[in-house]
Image (cartoon, rainbow, N blue to C red; front, side, top):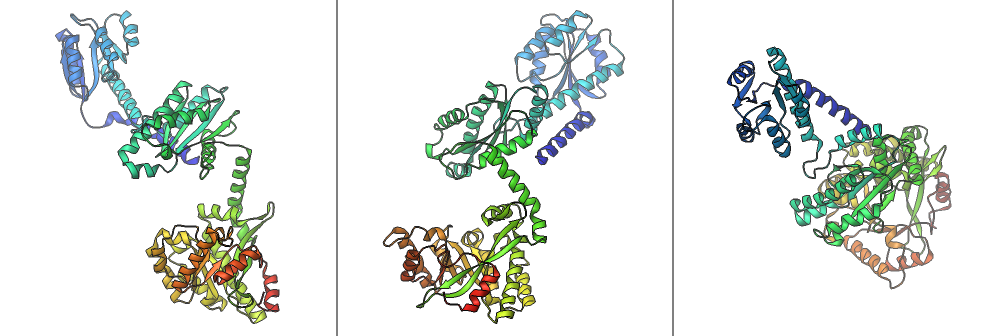
Amino acid sequence: MKSNETNSVALRTILYQVNVKLGDIDFFRTILVVDDEAVNREILGMILEQDYEVIYATNGREALAQIYAHQKELSLVLLDILMPEVDGFTVLEAMQADEMIRGIPVIVLTSEKSSEVKSLQLGAADFLTKPYDLPEVILARVRHSIDLYESENLIKATELDELTGLYTRDFFFEYGHEFDKHRTETVMDAIVLNFNRFHIINELHGRAYGDNVLRAIASEVFQLAESVGGIACRYDADTFYIYVVHSINYKKLLDRIQTNLTELLTETEIQIRMGVFQDVYREVPLEQRFDRALQACNSLRGKYGSKVAVYDKEMHDREVFVARLLSDFDTALKEKQFKVFYQPKYNIKGKFPVLSSLEALVSWQHPEFGRISPTDFIPLFEKNGLVQKLDHYVWKVAAEQIRDWKDKLGVTIPVSVNVSRVDIYDAKLFDYLLKLMKDNGIEPSAYLLEITESAYTDNSDQIVSVVNRLREAGFRVEMDDFGSGYSSLNMLTSLPIDALKLDMACVRNIAGGSKEMRMVELVLDIARYLGVPVVAEGVETKEQYELLKKAGCDIIQGFYFSRAIPPELVAKLLKQGVRA
């Protein structure tokens, strides 16, 4: 929202400066003087020629010929009204009828007061009365008309999106503010229309074809907005904003757009979604209304049966909740509201399950909201650049806890921590982890680093380089969430890892002889070929445990054995012995 307001202010400032300064640019502008009397042409020529390029015409027919011949460079026409053959009124009418020359400003030259009103009605910008005023007055009127003409052309050139002909985002909000100012009682809806995965269209059919699709969408959007007196813009590459009177049938609009797009695309390629914010009382600024419509639109990601979402109380509450989490983050770190718990991992290769390591998991004990699940804040912090701060906090707490158990119980139990994409690209990661080990007197082998499968696919060369360096220093690296991403088997054979963590989604529906179980068995075969153990996450039942043990799974983690527990309960486990 603030970004849009800043852009609008900047835009108005630029246009103001252009309006003031454009006439100072050092080049000659061309003026056409049209008058059947030679003496009048000579007088005007003498006044203008020092500052302008002047061409002449002796009647209306010649004037139109000159206008068409010089339409691209012509800045102004001084037009006598009373002339033989074709008079000035006829020239004005002809110019108004032709879009190519309609915008060229005209100052009429007349000695008859009655002609002035008619001239202005036909589009004249100004008039000069015969006999002529002082040269300074003529030059000032000429300069003023040219400045207005050039400023207007600049505005027209920047207010429309070149591809679609809709407003640009900055002009869209400017016009929206004007609309609100003058139609305060009209209930308006903010609508965001987005073509999901539009880049696939460009990749399959080419950019020119994709541009045709955008034009087709824009055409429908424009017709909708125009039919109800609203406005529309192309906000981004494949996103459109529409500001229209309330009571639009949104599904009908989408169906109409999709029907027209079937001439260009197959039905499976058309993936349009719409978000709507209805603000009966205009309680929030215009930009924020569209922010909320966009939020509603984005809520449809992955919901292939839904096409339209209206911003509602649930979304509003979520928005407020998210804002609070972000604003409370630094305080939460300082006050140690983030609590680190540890979920046991059991090696099941022997006769009895044996505690082999722990995973550090974080939750947030908020003073107002109570316990907040990591699924609520981890993705949020990843999106807003805060996850690295949280990771460092968890790493530090986990390292100190390993040292504490070692000092008090004489046992060093390995703990795994999550390493995000952001961490991997941090040039200081290696030094930070080594210092953490040194400060707490623990060996890197007791500190397991879990990196998600999807992170490996981002930039495999850099990931491999970072991971190799960490392993050489003694850290053990586990590929987390395996089976949830897009790793190819070929890539898997080249990645440096010490363990595969099978995603809980792979385990959830396993049963004897099922396809899910067969997939798990294939992963276990691959791991054996690579010579690395497999950790199965999310094991909750005895049946799952027995199936995995029989299939040769190495380590199990999940509610069947234990939830994530606080450090003091881990200490009890360690005192009792490591056997389950």
